[in-house]
Length: 48
Image (cartoon, rainbow, N blue to C red; front, side, top):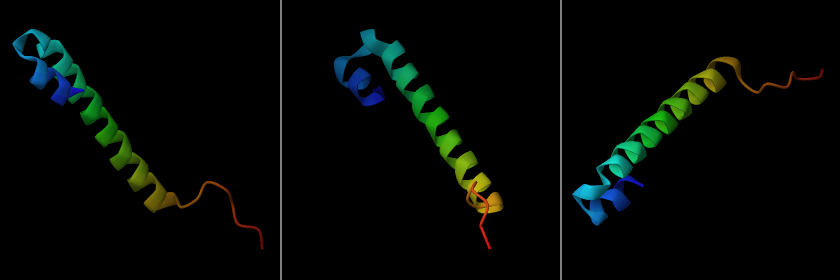
């Protein structure tokens, strides 16, 4: 989305900002999810 806004010009600065915010939020969620999975493993308990 950010690249689309850059390609369209200065009139679409809001599109660039929104794209960067969405990308940053997705990156944070991915990092938090990876850390959570590394610490806790699969959510389902193992059956013995």
